[in-house]
Image (cartoon, rainbow, N blue to C red; front, top):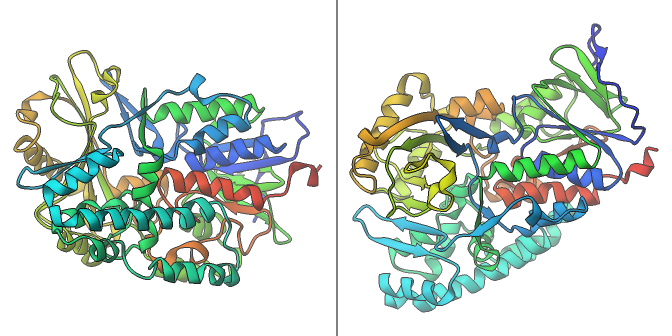
Length: 509
């Protein structure tokens, strides 16, 4: 796969440690780089964009700082462990602030539910909505705790490389109802429809439809209760900066504007990468944090693939698309929470439009993020920074976002102005949108999906692209498109899986 005019990279290294190349600098790639550096590798991270972070990059505009992607930090111990591996303390570099409440969930009629980690307060919130559901809620949380123990604590960092691995957990899957959907599981315990919505929406945070996502993802409710929901002061980009500092401190390097064309395969093994400019880097191992579909259909194009062929990739279910509007206002909205989930008039029907018919509906549900509620320094004095996210169909829906993006933004603006942000139109001083087309163009995301493969049971664990490539020796995959899946705990755990798959550096010395 080496092009005839390829030439070695102009970067000369005197470091003789075995070399690991990481393609992509999302949280999965950065975490993998830190872990490999701690195990003796010289690591080079290659990022095609002009700043690291992938979906977690940062937009700075008109004095405002906007996190482009993830804003909710759960299971912070996964980050703390990376700092420990690098011989550092996370608290010296990044300040994580616990959120209380985690979210304010707002319904169309204006009713709100304060979702927090306070056991007593949550019980009272449930009682306020439906006294008859308090006991069912407690039973659901017990089930969530059990699922979390098995699905996250025991299996989240364990590779699934054979059907036998899947069969071994089948009894637990059946016992915990993994064949059911998240919504169906919640509905077993809770009768009130608004509470069913509140306790089933979590799969949307990782690209899943609550009516199709496996009940295994009910674990998120307990994960949040146990470890909390946090925000990094300065924004999620501070975590990206911190991890980059760890990598450099280990003697690794991060190259931005470095576009990988192909993974070089010699005698069935990954031996480096060929760059878009024709240069190449040799490597003992290659880790791809690129979209898993892109890895197989483009970075390994021309290489025989037994499992993840173009046809199989095309037949897989992709997660939904995301429409994100970043905006700043010249006034403060002190009554708006840090995280607000705004439910529209429809739940099941809207999700059907997004995931199944791929129709862009007239109504929407939104996630409104106001980071200046916690960190005013993310905006100029007296101003507020926001981003609002709407789940939308991925590019398989055929929407022309260049043509409709601005009109869709105006619809969201009108909805927000009429509900929680009065006077919004006249208060906006900066604005930027990201559409599924941008996810395709910027992140090479298949179908412009926001989270890679949709998290249904038949695309979970062994059924996802494996963390160790089935087709190419010394090639490994991390990130949302591989096991265990999307979300910060998922992508950080995908890097953790490599600890049991990648040989220590001395094997190549």
